[in-house]
Length: 175
Image (cartoon, rainbow, N blue to C red; front, side, top):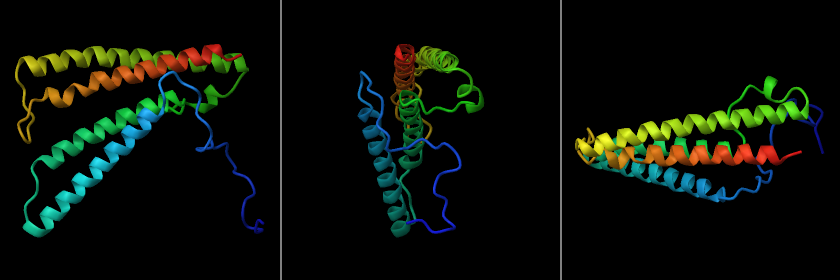
């Protein structure tokens, strides 16, 4: 039963978050579970630091550095999931207008550009990881090897590039 002041439909076309994901070669549950794990770690680290700070007027030195690292990982994992689900940012006026063939070409072009961008990011960041390793760079907060943090950028950028290639291929198969 709808009350008179309640809208019976949404004024804009909002994608249903419960809608079933497309079938992918690599399961999307990977990104989903990584998101849960990283968010849980962030919550635990932050909560532990708050407790320690409250009871001792001190804080764990490593929590800020590790939290920043986890937030970057979270952003890249979420980026991979959004690309795989075709929910990345785009100008819908252009992407959703025109004939279905035009929409498919634009979707494939966008997926290809995302793949190229993240492939280049993976290649360039691999050099950064090598430099961090070669020159023995350490993190500013707790002094662990910097490559422990930076090695995840080329790995996750490659994952995003591969997800974008998968989207490119799936959009090419649609009639």
